[in-house]
Image (tube, rainbow, N blue to C red; front, top):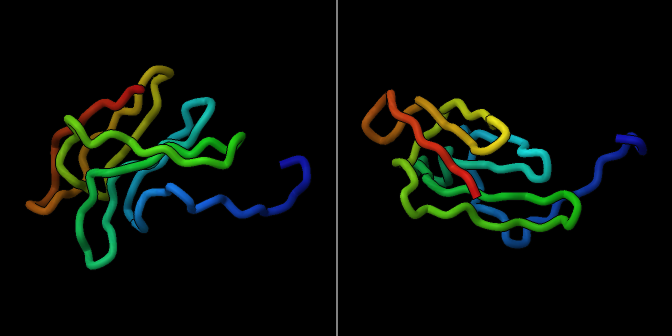
Length: 100
């Protein structure tokens, strides 16, 4: 950062609290997905944060994979690809792709 300072990020419209999720940068926004929420509940939800406008938008759950945490995610210039991690049944060897 050019100012070498920390600034808060809005929580209005942000996804629920979580850990064990992944985050990628698509060139314009941060996309987060999955993880574990309060009470150890696995999540198959996410959000898209735009730092230029300091706003959050949800990631659709339609067609999304089962909840998981500890998975890997990459951005391939067109889509977010997730793989592996663990779901409520154990370790997973499946993946999915998300694009806007």
